[in-house]
Image (tube, protein in one colour):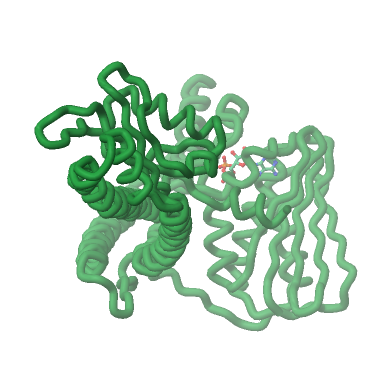
Length: 472
Ligand code: ADP
């Protein structure tokens, strides 16, 4: 029961496979049905025609027989004798005079039930068509025409033939034909569904291949399918051309960002240096001038940081970001990072390590940058009186570094997006923190570049835990 429900749930009502299957199966059902209807109708006509010919022969013989007998006996007796001669267990005759009264009839009428006889009589009152009549449990073919003997009209002659046996056989054949047609349609539908699924497989393969292409892979990826149909092959080629165009424009964009960042960073660093030296001397500056210079210096510093981040990301994207991987003792690195962070902020930063000196192969400076970024965020997004804890642990073949704060936390719906470039949760509040939304994407790029992973666990109003997992 559950399996059937699962199958129904998996059916995509708008899929090409379902549409093609339904379309072709409907056409084949209409074709098959039409053939079955036409065959049944034709067989019924042949059955009627063969019996019609037979009773027409009987009807043609009766006037001749009546003519012969009339020479030897009374016409009424001759008529009855002729009818008796032509009657058998399946054939019945009767004659009505012009006043519509039955004047002679087959002697075996009583083999039929009264209701059947009454029904046949009533049918003879209406125009007679070449078709099968059903009366009681029997099937009949009926003939009616005027009876003329030696040029004299005696009345109307009716001949009826019981075709129950033939008609029952015919109905059984029709039933078999319909069952066979329905079975054929079902088999065709399943065969079609399977065939269409197989034919559409290359398309599915193509979409699965393109699904996993990221901006970084654009330059290397080429879609290749084994023996695809020509149309899909053409589509794959078009995709490949599109990918190479996208790759080119992506590279140009990276180059542009990298060049612009580089060109702007150098003069801005000089400006920042001059501002700092003027501020240091503080000779005859008025308080307003000093405040203006401090603002300019802080904005320049912020912009230099932003440009450096952009430059790092552009380098990472274009594969020019090199890691100097070497074996480092993580405990020393953590202690150094905390020491550096304490210089820049007044916050309490605690270290919790449950491990003896833990060595890992990492890029020492890049990992420092990662932890400083995370600590910087923890400081920015928590109240000044709350502590920040840096934890170092080992789990199997992995080193686990955690930066925990008791700050504002991140709403669940934003947690999966904060590692995206320029993504900031609450612009209104973040405005005062002076970030750019690039810090965490740099963290992610650096950690992944060292073969690790970074995750966040956060609860609104309670704090956040950023976990960096690195292979040992
Ligand atoms: P920003 O320069 O804005 O700090 P990040 O990429 O470092 O950019 O962070 C992205 C966003 O994630 C931030 O704007 C902030 O809203 C949220 N965020 C990052 N770290 C924390 C944290 N420790 N606590 C709460 N929110 C955080």
